[in-house]
Each structure stands twice: as C-alpha cells, then as structure tokens.
Amino acid sequence: RSKNDGRGVYRFFEKVMDAEFQSRLALEMDLRCAINNNELELFYQPIISLDSNRLCGFEALIRWNHPTRGVVPPTEFIGIAEEIGLIDSIGAWVLKSACAEAATWPSDLKVAVNISPVQFNSKLIVLSVISALGETNLPPSRLELEITEAAMLDDNVLTLQTLHELKSLGCRISMDDFGTGYSSLNYVQKFPFDRIKIDQCFVRNMSEEDRSNAIVRAVTGLGASFGMKITAEGVETRAQLKQLQIEGCNEVQGYLFSPPRCARDTRRLIDRVRERARIPA
Ligand code: C2E
Ligand code: MG
Ligand code: MG
Ligand code: MG
Image (cartoon, rainbow, N blue to C red):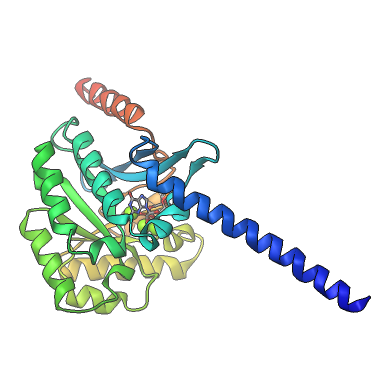
C-alpha cells in the first residue's frame, strides 16, 4: 500500500510538472507569433524633469496582449524571448515602434527604451538602433537606451565598444535598476553612462528611513562627480518626491505622476500638458 501511495504522489507531481511544461511550451509558441499577430504594444510612462519642473519624455514599456491569457507583463516573457532567440526581433520591434511614436511628439520630448541584456550583447543591437532612427527620422538625441547592470556582466572589450558605438550615434545611455546588481560601482567607473536610474527599491523607503535617503544622496553625489544625471523610478508619494528634490535628483517617474499609458492616452496627455503651458500663469 505504502509503495503505491508513493507512486501516486509521484504521478501527481508528474502531472503538475507536465501541465507547467505544456503551458510554458504553449507560451513559447504563442510568443513566436506575437509580433506578426500585432499582439505586442508599448505603453509610455511620463518622466518629469525636476530641473525644469516639466514633462521631459516617456519610458516605453512593452505589453503582450495575449488572446486568451490577457495582458502578459514583460517580466513574464522577456526572459523567455531571450531563451528562445526572439529577443533581437522583439527588441528591434520595440526600438522601431518607440522611435516612430516619439517622432509624433513635440521635439523637446525624449523616449527611453529598455534593452535586454541578451539584446545588448548581440551583434545586431547597433544595427537595430541605426535602422529604427533611420526609418523614423527621430533625432538620436531624443533616444535614451536603458541597460540593466546584468547586461554588463560580460565585462569585456566588446561591451565597451558597443556602448561607444551607440553613443557615437548620438543616443544617450542609462544604467537601469542601479544598485541591484553585483558591481554597480565598478560599472560606473568603467562605462560611459549618461544617466543612472536609481532602482525603486531605494526610493520606496525614502523619507521614512534615513538609510535609503543616504543611499540616494550617495548616488546623486556619484552622478555629480562622474557627470551623470540621476533619475528616480517608482516615485509614489509626495514625501518621496520632496526628499528626491532635496537630494538633487534630476528626473522622476512613478505612479505619483502617472502609470504607463497606451500610445493614444499618451498623446492626449501631451496635448493637455501643452494646452496648460499656453495659458499664462
Ligand atoms: P524597468 O525598466 O525598471 O521599468 C520600471 C517598472 O516599474 C515598470 O514595470 C513600470 O510599470 C513600473 N513602475 C512605474 N512606476 C511605478 C511606481 O510608482 N511603483 C511601482 N511599484 N512600479 C512602477 P513593467 O512595465 O512591468 O516593466 C518591468 C520591467 O520589464 C522593466 O523594468 C524592464 O526591465 C522590462 N521591460 C519593460 N519593457 C521592456 C522592453 O520593451 N524591452 C525589454 N528588454 N525589457 C522591458
Ligand atoms: Mg527601464
Ligand atoms: Mg528600472
Ligand atoms: Mg526594473
């Protein structure tokens, strides 16, 4: 009896594992068709400059509108895209769509695009950026590329060369999720970033916790010494905003201002902001 019980448990797990495996396999198959089926969509989150107190651009954030699963967040499919060799084509689609959209905005607004580590380390990245800019006529100075620390892990000549090539096109480069990787300081020293994005985990505890304030202060100090601008992400409260202003942070984004919105709502927001700017104070 007891032997059979054991086997029953095994079969149960086998079934669960099998279901998970099947589901993952189905997701992979669906992802392969997502671009052609027009299921990928970019949302845009406003970025506010604290230096000018103005809207200065948007970060493009990808969404997958799956026909049966609903909206799949990037954290659930970018990793899969990297594993099954789809990240170059999805990444190229993101670059092209974001640049095309930004080209319709007023010319003082930039667009920030996330580049996955695998995409960054691929030979195609520079070509993807060149063709996105070329096809959309977006001035390179309006494109900012966000790269997470993980992308740099291959700390080699090629990484540095890619960064320099992207910068020589005229784009700016940001280090995303700063402080969450192994060797943030090493990267700051070695690589020519224009901007640091302080990860939201440090912003979250600001104003309530002196330690988080001290970390943000240290990062803004680092930025000042290395000629890099600082953006804080995940700003949700007025208290956090106030503290970030005190610490000399250059740009902020977060739910306090707006969640990411679809392209149409983003255009409406831009129109409203411009309308308000025309009314004399
Ligand atoms: P990220 O680039 O660090 O983006 C910030 C994430 O924080 C976004 O999640 C955004 O929606 C969310 N967020 C914004 N404001 C707040 C806030 O006030 N509070 C909180 N709690 N969260 C906030 P999302 O859109 O789910 O994206 C997650 C990650 O997926 C991104 O992190 C980025 O690493 C990656 N990702 C997004 N779009 C793309 C893409 O087009 N290509 C690639 N390679 N990766 C992408
Ligand atoms: Mg980002
Ligand atoms: Mg981030
Ligand atoms: Mg992140």
